[in-house]
Image 1 (tube, rainbow, N blue to C red):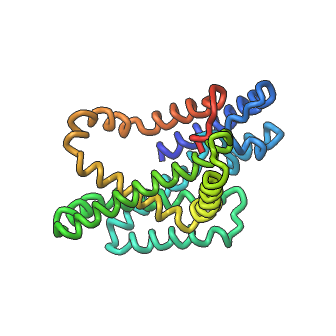
Image 2 (image 1 turned 90 degrees about the vertical axis):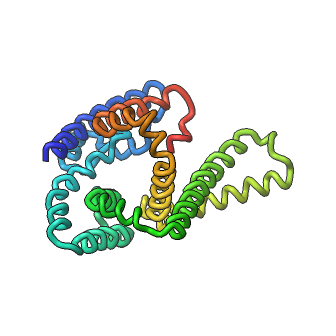
Length: 273
């Protein structure tokens, strides 16, 4: 409840301040610090009311508001998982059902609460059963364990490399047409552009794309496998740093949200999106 209250207070402060700064920057420099500013209420009292009622949020800390109800519900969910053996199945099933049904629902300003809840629930369940998952992994036979390690790392690498190529290649050459050969080069750029459009539909689609959750889980598993492989070295040389980040995660998130918000004033920002 304390953490939820802190998030609630900071979300209101950030939204009002970021809207004011964003509007000033746009009016005086022509720089849009972050998309979504056009959806901000024009009246400041309306903006404050919508911030208080969690209907509007702006800035790179905008999804802080989504975690407020999740944190309030988490003690009950944790108790259910500890009390009833298969409660996690009902919780995860309900969460995934809501996520899949979002395109059919009209939740208005609360649409994104239905999106981010699935990521919170997956993380919550993994946290609750972390030790059981670790014990299962240790008991797993070498052959399937190796198959999971290799396939998850390959999958994560493919997603990282592929998404980087389809994101930056068309943009890079669109601004430098003199670097593109007449026929083969343009055909390749058109191919990348078409793939990008298809992937945006499957991965984005207002953050409910069919492959979005699967891709994120593959990335998470791949990164975790890399961490397990280099765990001793990571803990030896950088363990103190990651422990510090974990201990003050909310404060670190708030600082990076402030920093990233002002980045567009100093250069191109395609990498932010």
